[in-house]
Image 1 (cartoon, rainbow, N blue to C red):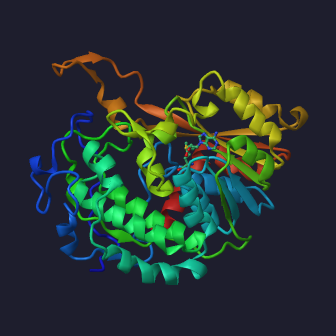
Image 2 (image 1 turned 90 degrees about the vertical axis):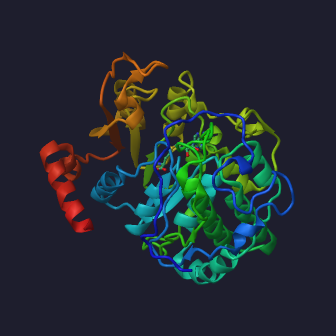
Image 3 (image 1 turned 135 degrees about the horizontal axis):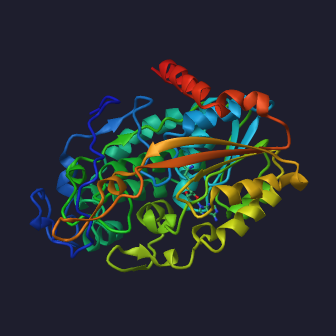
Length: 429
Ligand SMILES: C[S@@+](CC[C@H](N)C(=O)[O-])C[C@H]1O[C@@H](n2cnc3c(N)ncnc32)[C@H](O)[C@@H]1O
């Protein structure tokens, strides 16, 4: 069954997020076809459901991701467009690659980097792969993959039964699809497109509040939906050349990837991305890692730490990246709740190029995430704490070897900026 781009989905987070002992699938109200965990073939009955696959362009949804720059993308584009003679942008902390994807769509050559394997795969799909090379084969393969019967094994047992991030009926299908992708020995970009379709499909039916530190005690309503593969929105090659995806530590990437603009969107706090998205890492690596704890995290979550998650080390690490870059312009996203305060950031950027850098700050205000707005309650449901603030500020800092005050003037003035936003919103409608 080919569904429309507007196919129903439910990404609402459920209220309770408490890791807890896993009831067997038979305990849940939604277990037709399910038998005891671990019994071979437990969930294959689900594969007889109608095939769900969307091959229309634009039907895909990116994964839920902390710190994703969904709202800031138009502003980032406005800034890069305002800087003269830019061809190549290096995105050192690419995450979902939504920034790189938008820049590619605007014609820029993008070199995307992230130290996690799932993020490298998303970058290979959205930044490196070009529609003309991969889409015909991806369109042919997706229905075949979507039709595979469930194949419960290690993945289903570990992340759908021992821990409960995905319903076993979907876990078994994800496992069958992942095994099939691995067995085909596909070209690396086509493989990344199919893996991205699978990651995004799994994300739409997960049973978390958006991160994988814990899963919901009761299955989230969306986790009972059928897994649906959708064709990712892969774009044609950009006017300024083919993009690249890399999996390097940020400092090494700053030394080896060269572009006109260096875009930096590092983590803001101690929350480690590998720990928050460990199931996606294992799904992409397909490496059956040893795991620990209720959430069955990969053991390497304890070793693969980033200095950008450390309050003590982040400033020096950013400094090292800034010193290593050969870019003429640096664009940094940072949040007023992050480990580096505005003054420190301005001082660091101002010191670039022997202290001759021109530095500009473009703030955007956003409502804080819902938990922060609701307030602080005790276990009886009584309000015990005050919400300190309802908004946070996302800063975009621009540092350049050149004086860009004329080019950036409309973005530096708040009133002209909102006019630009209205025009951009109207153009997007
Ligand atoms: C704030 S997120 C980026 C979000 C991204 N701009 C988006 O819109 O989806 C920060 C990213 O930095 C990556 N990261 C953290 N430490 C890193 C390091 N030392 N080297 C490379 N990437 C790193 C994380 O995996 C995470 O994806």
